[in-house]
Image 1 (spheres, rainbow, N blue to C red):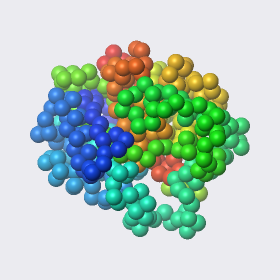
Image 2: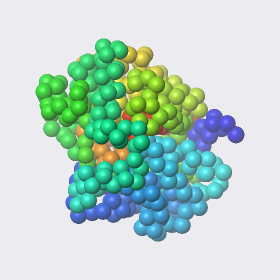
Image 3: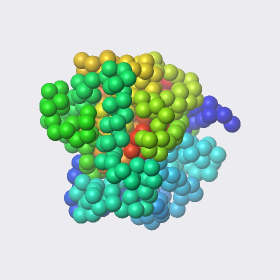
Length: 391
């Protein structure tokens, strides 16, 4: 079997979110359960139909066991690999293999976090993670991560290619423009370039608006084989290609600060899909910071290396622009509960189903989803999704 043999053989058939923004008084498992039940119902299935599970959590080494027990599942296939926020895009490929092999029939991909409102807050969680999974290369220098590492990447891109703080601000403003059309988005107040540039500096060159939100939120989606997907409740969205690339752990391990592993994951996902950047109608990019969007647009082939800043000028990726990116508002303005990959996937599905109301991209039939993980773009997972008309 080659990767191309999996093209379009599996579809996403149900999606759900819960607790986005703030979910006071709820646990991570509670809001995850709400999102999971919503996704399964959206697919026209019941929890008894779910016999595959993909899930991960930065605060628990055996998180799949917690989810299995909480949801009352008896999975035949379990995938819990945690490579950061890209995990929930990366989960797709092993799930596709399991489905195509007949190991299972319906896979639930799910995530939940209450990092914003939980009594055990972000500082405590960060301290616990540092004990469980210390970064041996950067930790001795006590960087303010993740902002410090991404800021270093942004500074190098600016130095090498002339990218400006205004270019970064364009990304934040575009994301907010989409968020204002999304009732589910956490940050919906107006935002302009000057406000971004004059905001409190977090880690030079990033101000507060260059950095993703800190929210609660849960997201889930259901995958089945394509032959079954066509008979279910909602319009199926087919996975045409999926690939993951991991090149390093810390920013000090990057050979080139201006190139991310999505240059590889994107190329392999396109090859599997038999599609290219010119065929894509909408992109959902994990925007942990504004530089992520600019570099992903380059590395995924939507513009040449070094031209990402110019590509996003004058609202080009916002509502009414030439290429729609992060149409829910992204991690910068919609939701970012520590790991965002599942939310990007769900927005792509909703766009291809035509369910996005005011923010709907007319005639969207293809989408790229790009996940990002780690403190330095360490893991990148790319999925190419499409409607049945593209098969």
